[in-house]
Length: 104
Image (cartoon, rainbow, N blue to C red; front, side, top):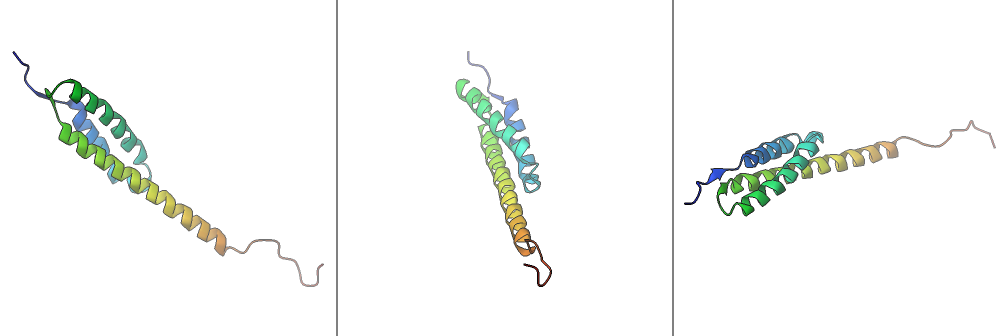
């Protein structure tokens, strides 16, 4: 007698963390939930594979993993844009010492 397929509880958590990571990825705070989603997705995928088809929710895991990667890409893009803006700001500011006229 085979057991009934049951939904994986981690699959919904992976999706929720991935969604939070995507929504807050622009603010760089999405790195933490996105990383947690990817770590939890690895565990959930292993459990679902070991269960031999009796744990459902692989679609939610896949979606959550995609959302988490999207959040990480948004956070990385934000950091790149901030670094470029900072470099442009530093380039516009006159640097060096300003000596009075006639000083050697």
